[in-house]
Length: 531
Image (cartoon, rainbow, N blue to C red; front, side, top):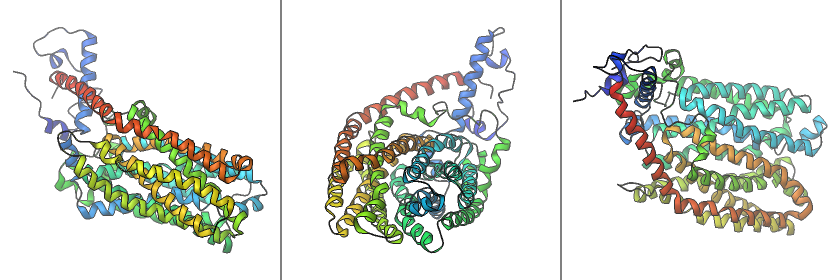
């Protein structure tokens, strides 16, 4: 009978197998005196893959161990820290809008070049997560948090000192590169500490950081630029982020199990707050095998888009994000030209949509938890239905409100009509985003940062296109017809939601079955490994 290896020993002993170990013929196949070199190489590869699987738990039991490492109070603290960190990227984008005219005057540039800085920011907002999220899923969350926020602080100092358009554009790129990946890494952090049945609620509270930012950023940016000048927007961001960087350095534990020392697998030891250093220092002790993901991990976030359900969800979210960003981008022009509001007042108008984001985030988090308990658990869970059950309703409402909003701007209805429309657009859009993000994490819990980065890439590139197109579109067609056409295009894109609801469960089960067969093959090869 084949002797089964002790998996506990595999998880706790870091010196059992190293890639530079020479495996003898006797070690590989007992009782055989001669083995071909290709067989030896194949067995080495099998041992490497098995070692990766052993260090990267993917079963339900392993995930329960991972999420139970932290107490409820610690989960709340981690969620707060991650949420505050996610605040900076959208705040940087939205506090910029009320001060655009002041920056144009100060640096002597036209509005087209100013809009170009927004487009470039969004492009790099999509590129950056594809680079950082891979390291967050393989090296840990803490190091990436600290590195990227440090870049963000430096970029804000550069923006505050910018004296020409080249400096403004260059440091905006660095700002996007430093801050934009934090949201996807934060989503991975929440996935690390939560189980599926509680994930919707924590995801809702976590998303308050990057949904609260659009609510207050324009008002704060307008106030600062009016009384202190636009440069103090970036000085304030640099100082605030530096303070949070210090808090994060001392208070945020490493939540990713992969790469931590084996004692972190024990709930009693891992829940100790003293293990926070693991994610920062473990790079010194990690072997080349530990730097690899499990056998099913993607080498790039964009490879996640090869899965049909991921592509459908990403495309649905990208069209939705692009439509929303056309509203955000043109809001200053609508209220400045049609209602004669100054910079400070324009900033205050963003509060309506921002509070809609907050309401949609909290309510949808509660609904997601309830629906998952009813439909997402059991022997044959309906995960897709549980997460997307109400998305179609939000989608229809958003389309109708968007067209109404455009014509309200043309006919210059009372400002309250536009503000209420913005609030409802915020509620419906954020409810959809939360549902999509939570489902993506459910589908790939061990690659949560990478899957969110893939989603971010689609969203930001579509948003960048929308930002570049909407201004000339309004010039030619006006607000009413422009938003009506956008609403019609958005309605056509809802087909991705229909496809996901109909075929998503089938695609997920096929992927799980295929991955299960791969894992079974590797387990058969485990007997050839030296234990």
